[in-house]
Amino acid sequence: MLYIACRTKLTYLRWWCYLVKTHNIIGTVYLIVNVKMILFRKFRVLILMVFLVACTMHIMIDLLPKLEKRAAGTNSGTGGCSCSHNPSEEPRNWAKQQARSGPESGWPNKHTLRILQDFSNEPSSNLTSHSLEKVTGTVDKADSEKRIPLVPGNIKDTGAGKKRYAPGFSRLAALYDHPLYKIDPPSLKDDDTLFSVNTDIRLYPKTAGNPEWHNEGNAEEEEYSPTGGATTESYPNWLRFHVGINRYELYSRHNPTIDALLKDLVSQSITSVAMKSGGTQLKLIMTFHNYGQALFKPMKQTREKETPPDFFYFSDFERHNAEVAAFHLDRILDFRRVPPVAGRLVNMTREIRDVTRDKKLWRTFFISPANNICFYGECSYYCSTEHALCGKPDQIEGSLAAFLPDLALAKRKTWRSPWRRSYHKRKKAEWEVDPDYCDEVKQTPPYDQGTRLLDVMDMAVFDFLMGNMDRHHYETFEKFGNETFIIHLDNGRGFGKHSHDELSILVPLSQCCRVKRSTYLRLQLLAKEEFKLSTLMEESLLRDRLSPVLIRPHLEALDRRLRVVLKVLSDCVEKEGFASVVEDDLRSPHHESGARGR
Ligand SMILES: *[C@@H]1O[C@H](CO)[C@@H](O)[C@H](O)[C@H]1NC(C)=O
Ligand SMILES: *[C@@H]1O[C@H](CO)[C@@H](O)[C@H](O)[C@H]1NC(C)=O
Ligand SMILES: *[C@@H]1O[C@H](CO)[C@@H](O)[C@H](O)[C@H]1NC(C)=O
Image (cartoon, rainbow, N blue to C red):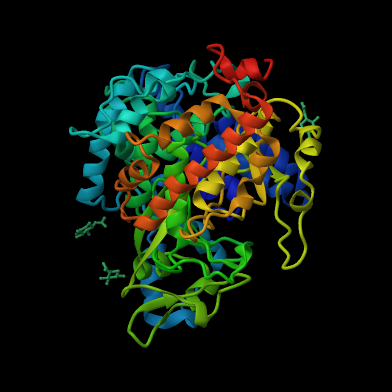
């Protein structure tokens, strides 16, 4: 019956199914959330209730024999969610059928297919030797974590005893070894983590005691923990990333999960593709074999192509390499507010056309006169034959950004940026005409207290360095209220022009003259010849599959812009005095909580 739940077209039921199946932690919370949501949908209430009851019964029925077998009590299981045990043959057949009969006749009922595909690529499917290698490769890292339960608070421990760098000199390693990159985050209380992991209940048995049971249906699980046991290692990396999110950061420094997640983004097989609705340009939501999801932005123009001088910032293309570079830049600045992004070369036929259930997307595929595969999808601009995205001949580059937790699990609040542009060819925004605009902002909640204003200053620096003029909104996790970091999503309009420094992006900083001391010191460090932002970026980006991600002039622009930022700051200090410009967020061990008066 869970099987049915897993196949329903209702996304949240499916989510619930696989949360129960693969991880358990959030399962219960999630169920409650679901029930709430269901109550809003009057006409579905009855059916869904039946589903939920049926699912619960199913788990219990499924569990009982196991619990008996296993002498009761070693675990309270992962439930044999049968959705993973019964991989359907349908999708594969369908794919063939589709190939034979073409789009018009080959499309079976959308609803039945939609979900089937998510669960089609399961235990019995082939793991390539490559991905096996990868999985075993990450085990070493996982081992270092094994001793501690996955409590997001254990930020210091997770990085311990881990070799992260290849032998040979690495500036990046030297940077991350610098005391400024070793400042402990505030200690976390219960409500400082996005999800609470129930460590009292051991959901996965550590014993290798019952191999039959283990093999019975959880081959998938084994894939994640090839050592055959263990607790938290069986969480897929994307979930570990979600569980690690807290009030102060999206991920901790030296977190092995992030590197593993980046590898997943590049190597996990893609099981389904959908178009993201809304937005001006085509973006695809890709779902992976381990149920992780990522936002795919295909390459629209080459790295060398600068934004034409007559283009408005809002009509520029989004750049896939900017998304990748922004993640690395944010990490080097030690903000850690951009979700992990990796570049990937995607086979357009096998990994998009053949796995999408979206007829509208499927129909836009064609073969160009040069014999390349192309498609254009559906969106409000640039989705037409003239703006088609073409492969070489069937491979296309793109950026894959790991999804944040589902909005049903962790709501986010969207804030309008106080320094938002007018998005109009002639109109000016208020901040552009009023030099004292910041005084107003400083008195408006939530900028009147806490670190929000300083976080916006950080964001201005980040955006100026990459030349991103398109920061109209930002987001926070609702759970943390006003006292939390801000998430830097959507960086595709950065790195458009390397020959021009857009000073208006720095206006928040030059108008407010406020900066966190930690940011100020790091910027000074990155400007030093021995570190040098451009060299660090270059080294960091070498790890990406699409390296070189940025052409040299863009890297060099970073150093030049960093000097501009420091100049603005030193002018501020000269004008208003160090103490009123630089906010000391490094005072106590609980520096940030101190600053927040918590
Ligand atoms: C796995 O791959 C091999 C060839 O690589 C193929 O013969 C076999 O049928 C595949 N098995 C499954 C279950 O897809
Ligand atoms: C892409 O996938 C198709 C199968 O759908 C295959 O024929 C083709 O060789 C692949 N292209 C590359 C470059 O691997
Ligand atoms: C958070 O900010 C909003 C302004 O957007 C304000 O109305 C609210 O009172 C603030 N909450 C707290 C707890 O300060």
